[in-house]
Length: 353
Image (cartoon, rainbow, N blue to C red; front, side, top):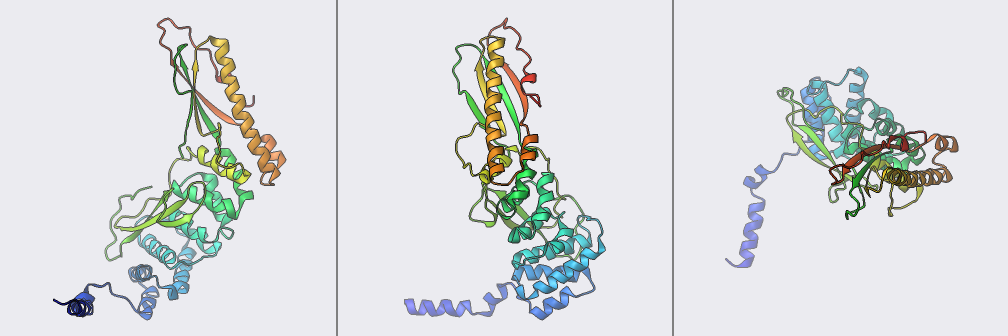
């Protein structure tokens, strides 16, 4: 077949009814508006779902009105019930239409942590007061990192004091036999899923937003020492309520504090987890060496506080009350069969010193 004929044939197929039938239907704005103002929660949820799929920005005012109406009820969130499904659909539609919400409209829905952080990231200054409790609570996985990133630029004077309680060093001291050769020092950094609930008959699929740390090429939420982006999918089961342990935040808190202090991502000894490998030369020498490690970590922490004070991100009074918290874990890896017991070293890291 000549090239021109092939081109015409392809154009004809592209405009054929068969191919058009396979394309997702686009709903008219007025039809979607009718669904959003329906008395039935299922209809409203479908209207919001279709607004999200079409990214129908013309209906953002109506989406916000529906969200405000749900907020008036002030009922506790029950994953999977009608109100929850409608709320998820509305928040999803507001994300997909790139809407910006005032803090007072978003505040009743902070339990939808991932979605709330995405919406709050569009105006960090407006939502700093909403993000601060999230940071202070230390919950939400990647959403916590995203909230820190937003506040880095939007409200640094609020973020610095909020992060200090998370700074705690896990110091592991590994005691080796004299003459052992190894790595010396190292550090490690340690920076939710659907619950089972009955599917709601007749409701649209629920949005599932997954926030990921240090991922590029996706939908960016907030840049920072470790950028956070999101992917969107759908699920038939409601995402879990906000959870996650409050521990394991020390390393990222230190990264953010160093950025606020202008110290840069250079070589640092102070990390969330530090490991020191020391050779056994007797109890007094071991105590001196561990005390020296503590002194170095203290000095770096005090330098960090001083920089934050100079940049007016921390008061002198608050800095004066801060002391570096260290949890000590001593591991005996000596090869001698009759080795002298290791001395108690906990007093070297107790606070206050």
